[in-house]
Length: 110
Length: 117
Image (cartoon, rainbow over all chains, first blue to last red; front, side, top):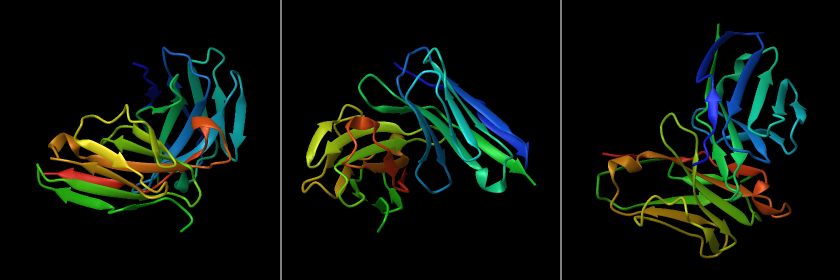
C-alpha cells in the first residue's frame, strides 16, 4: 500500500537551531500536508502544499512539495521551546484519504 | 465550544467489553472523520461521514467496529468485544462545509485513549 517514510524519527536540538525533516514515498501524491501534535492533543495542520515545487511558509516554518511529487520537506528556523512535539507529514491518496507518516519527535535541549 | 470535543478522554476496558466513544464536531461542519492512532504511529483513517451518511468505512479493522452519526452532528464509534490490539488513541476530526472534497482542513479533537486489559 501507499506509505510515507518520515525521517528522522526523533531529533534533539538546542534552542535557536534550525530543524529539517523530510518525508518520502514510492507513490506520487498531489497534496502534501504537515501537522504538529502535542501530548494529549490531536494533530494541528501547519502547512498544506498543492503544487509540485511549491514552497510555502507559515511563520518560522517552511515546507516544500518535491518536484517529483514523491517527497516533501519541512524546515523550522530558530527553534523555540514551544516547537517541541511530533511533526507528521501526510498526503492525500488516490481515494482522497489522508495518510500519515510515523512522525518526527522534536526535543529541545535546555 | 469552539473546537472538536471527544469523550471520554480516557477509557479502560476489560477484554471482551463493548465501548462507545463520542465525538462532538465543530458546529456546522458537514464532514466527520474517525482515525485510530496506535502508540508511536501516525493516525490511520477509519471512517468518514458527510452529514448522517457514512460514505466510507473502508478503514474499520473488523466488524466489531461500528460508527454512526444519526442526526448529522454528534458521532459515536462503538467497538464490540474489545481486544488488546484495539488499544489506541481514537481521534475524531471535522471539516468546514464551505470547502470541497476531502482536502478540507480537518480539525482534530484531543482523542480518546482506549486501553484494553
